[in-house]
Length: 95
Image 1 (cartoon, one colour):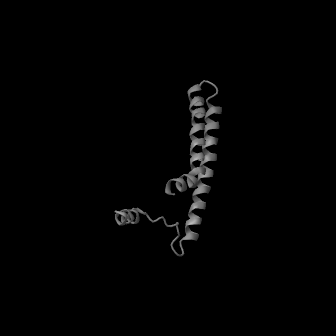
Image 2: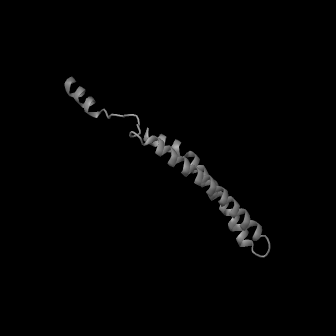
Image 3: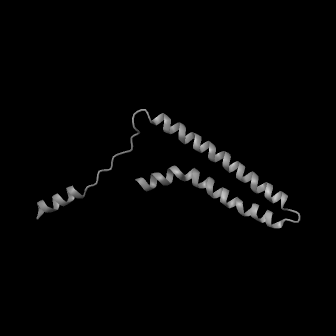
């Protein structure tokens, strides 16, 4: 009985190796992630700018355009928040 439990415990143990980048790929991955972060920051700035422009232009006689600009702000904030939390979320899921 004890040997069966020991065998089950040994078979049930799942290995959990730490992540290691393939040789020569670490610098490329860091550069790619840096580019993606930069693109995300620029896209967020453009998104806020477009929302502000829609609110400014929609102020007079185009109130629906102003409302659309105002409702776009949470979407931009959500996208920027998701981008900034991405590494933490992926790390939490994979560990």
